[in-house]
Image 1 (spheres, rainbow, N blue to C red):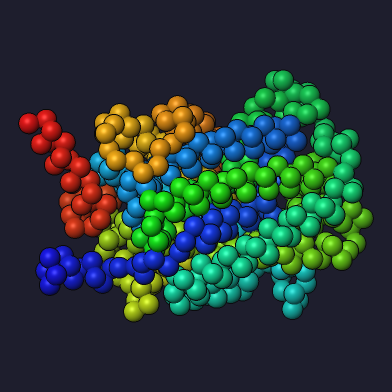
Image 2: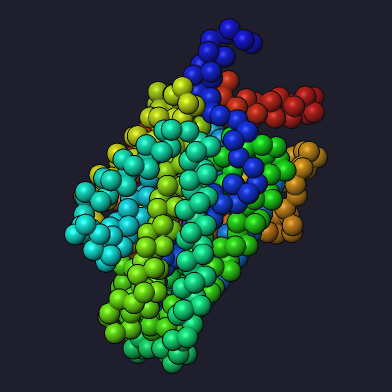
Length: 473
């Protein structure tokens, strides 16, 4: 009730409602991911060659499509800032909620760290102000764009939408320019590893290369699952979220296929497999900048900024929801006068900057982010299956096409992608696993005994449990 300690607690932890419609949310979904078209995916060519990465991209596209449609149903049922944590909390209990939410946090802290490094590569290739890829560039990214988020969510989402539009337009222009250089013989120009099982010119590293390329196939879509994190700041979320998520994944599937084929065909797999800015490299066959390559370089910077900016938003909302419910320290969910979770922005930002500046290894950060992401995907897909079976009569404003079959496909592919992170970089995967284990210990021994029952995700789960108990009686 108003005036109660619970109401005062939540009032200091509230977001600005009604700030986003379906178009802004579609832009947010694309913004999360669009940097993946400009950098990161090409490292998969060194793991699987053209054929291996192509198959991995298709399988990961299927996984994300199935996951997004499963999420859309759950987001319409439970439109809270917790997103995946809220879904898993309802279906799998407090442990399921914590394991999912923490995995998402790992993704959303490490992905911006990786992207800030890629931004540094693009800034260096443009020779902007004589800057090289290093900590001053990374620091500027975090300070400037966290500052815009602190200004307010409406302003932040509109900024993201504009920058994303520039990036998508640049991808279209890149494809039109690079397709004139397309040569099919360049696709399979990586030497064949004769010792790899099933190796051929299309799969130079054999069948295992397909599996090892999974994390890089994911980079074309990584982050789109974060759209439901905007639920509490959305107008009519039960209707808006499914529509925006479907539109976003549709745009991303088209961009992924076109960008991948045209870029590799223009430059060759061998020429792109180690490039920090693959689209610019694809356009500069002789190494000399052209008007088009410079334009794509600037626009690529816009794409990287869009994803960096949006992933910071997603991470802050996931941390806000977990903190509000007591899973992580509660002070992290305090909001400012402008209803921005300021500590939820500043703390992950400081950690992301430290990781970027301390390692300078975008590929490693990427693999660690994928480790967290794949765990959360498996848990969210499982949550959909459990909710369908346990609460079949629940009011569902939106229903997933294919039902449990759809979420089962997402579950199987997410588990396969999780194992693939150990194939690519065992050290990075084990470091991420160690961080995850430390978080689990914190929850087991401390925070699970101090949860906040009044938090929306906890309250919804408690009501569902009470209704189930009444039904049984």
